[in-house]
Length: 445
Image (cartoon, rainbow, N blue to C red; front, top):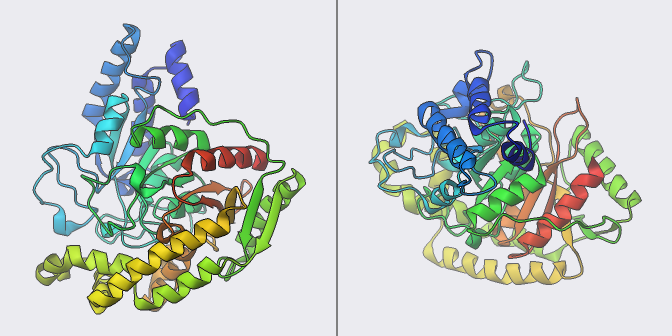
């Protein structure tokens, strides 16, 4: 599929239409041998075609709402669409009261003329980095489909929708890595913004202290464009940066532990390429990361906030939850109010510590996930599920706790298991991080 800028230029030149783009996406969704039935909870075939025709008419008459009008995007199944329940891929909420209004982020996409193509599958209630869903099926990573490998979560359908050409971009959420993990496992780009930049109203919550809304797409520029629209800003033009002289820091504590061979080789090759291009790469321990490991001994911030939201529903409908999701939410019941308040205090202190340690650098650089996507069959036992889920979430969740922004870039070669290189910066450095990521993306190509 084309990038957003390629599609926009073709639309302006008249060499394609929004209807053409939508039909191509729908054909991928409906392909009998494809993943569409597992990727989407609901497909907007009729309304997407009507919206595409409307955008084409507006463009022909010189009244297009913007450069990216008519481009099809997918929506994660926890974003409010007026008149529809937001089920978060759970059968518990399949018949919930329909939303009365669009989520603010959806209104912004529609104002830009983008065309929702459907609601994507996800980990139930967004509470896992694995991407398995026992209710609606598990969309598979594009890599080694004969084996059947996890897509990553929780924005599983979002990532596969982009990787398989079912949408030109996808809207996901990221509480502990849920945009970046599936991006890494599916070979696309995934972005986690500074959380406060994009409104979370009208999005079913997981942990409001950590929740953020981000895009998945094929390039850094695509993610930058969608991110700016979600934030209510004009579409961002990324400044060109040279790789030479970029100051990059690789943490040597925690984040490199447990890497498998293919991921280690892909990361090492990427680092060597950047070093050869003149990047100034510093390998060092980060005290804030060690301090975070100590703070988390109090318990999980995500679990306690999720439990506060789910408590009554679990009391009445626990048997309808994915048992592993229910168990993880119930961990939050173990944390007392004093520990919760102390953890919030720890978080503010660690955000400042991270920002101070990052001051000499343009970005942090680390593996998005230390392993390639495992086969779905590897999660047959609870012991394996919890062990692998923890390993998958470990690195990206650091950035959420520090309230930073982060992006995952593919760094594997064709035919290799997918691997993501994550770049991260402190809060509100999103524009700068996109510029750094764009430079690194070009160098890795």
